[in-house]
Image (cartoon, rainbow, N blue to C red; front, side, top):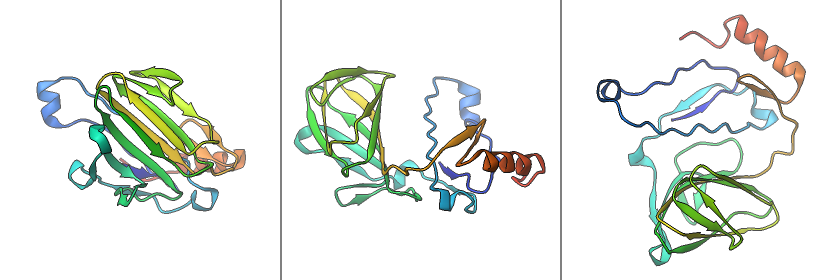
Length: 192
């Protein structure tokens, strides 16, 4: 799912009825992407993005494969609509394989290792559960899989705008935060 809070939205998250009956392990990643100031008060929205609409791309040289959730990899475009240029890629890398991925110059890039271990730019290893934040100076990201690995790569054009957060609210000024809290308390975000 891809939700845009925009001018305000209430939501709940829960697992399937089958999971309630059978149990098991649930893994979930929740990302918050800041909207540009000009789009902060956009109409709230929800995109149901199911696995069958996410492009799955074989990587060169048997390196593994990638699901393009948002943004672009070569000529493949992910299904998520975004308000600023960004990439969200779900990588599955094969043990002992390497891949070099490119992001536009000046973009902020980070990756989370979901499973396994990778060497990043030949400098150091990142293991399961670790976040790697890269400098904005380079365009190439070289990953070498020490084991079979799952990596979530996130990259985006920096907004260069102030950010003020309070609880679930993210705006550009304290005054906007106060207004968002008033809107929430008055019921303008709707009901569940």
